[in-house]
Length: 385
Image (cartoon, rainbow, N blue to C red; front, side, top):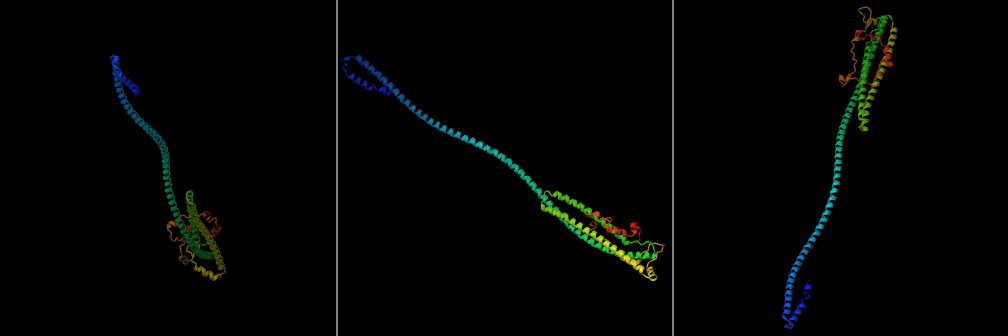
């Protein structure tokens, strides 16, 4: 536009110059027209200058606007980059939130497992406490069983002492039987068919044997009850008790009973043997006395023996032994319990085979019972001591 505006300026100015050099003869009209044209051209050039100045101002403004737009475009690009970064950050946050949600779910599951484990630990602690209490109870039970074993050992010692006492009593009874048999044979020979005197030793011995058998039966019942109780305790503790404790309990259960049974069987067998020996010795002594009686001279010896015997005051009756024989001091036939009270003495002490301990089941006792005088099978209260 500037080239078009200023392109013909030199040509017109050169033409005006040449026109001014032309001679004035051509007329003033032409000159006026030219001046008018020049004025119009000046006006046009002024307007053109205004237009150019406005265009230059507008160009400056446009350049400022372009610079502004360029700054805004740069800011918009920066904003787009920032928005893209924010979107990426948001996506990362979303992914992190999802990951945290998954971790939260796993943490909740872990918390549930930890709670279950805590309850299980509490249950196991309770079971451990119960097991400790049961172990303490078993230790106490074992201690009681050991004390029981010691008591049974003391009972065994007491039975041994009782056996010795029974031996002494048997010896005393044997001596008394010999004396009574001698007197009864002598009285029967003098009276000639009179009833023999009562054998006090034979009356005492069955009563002692009956007491012994009754006591042994009671002890048998007591031992059976103890065996049942120990068996129930063993069955109750077999499920949780170690094998060593079970073996100890079995040993503590079986050993005292076996020892008691063996001791009582040996005691009964010894009593039977002693009774058989005493009965055989008594019969042998009676036969010897009868033989000596019939071998004595008739007039003097029998008369002296009849004078040594007392004569009954009231009619005929059974002869009694001399008073010096009755007044002899006699050791009471009693089982001496050393170191035990009366409650322990009369406590029932059963045996395993006490049912077989009966005077009717033993051949030695049956024969001894048949050999006793007929007065023993009557009322024992009728005899006078």
